[in-house]
Image (cartoon, one colour):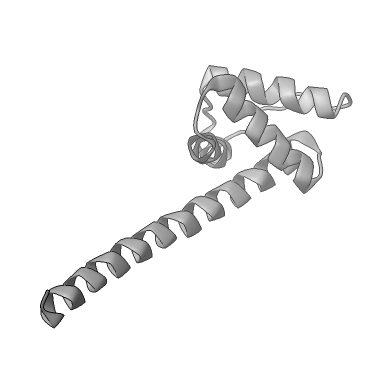
Length: 107
């Protein structure tokens, strides 16, 4: 194999790896933001908010990243799919029995 072909393959592999890392960083940021929303909504600690998001993901059979995207948009647009809303409320109420259900409002 020529050095040029090897070089081109290495560059292609590195570009793919960079794209995957960029996606992972973006997904991580969205999940962190969603944790913040759950903390504010449910009055729970960050580690508990993480558990809530995972539970909502599992109970609704929705990828965690997708749950996080919906939760992050929820305070801005006032909409959360009903299955996610129900699962989120149930999970938060389970971990914080004093939680009072309050719907975020859009401005």
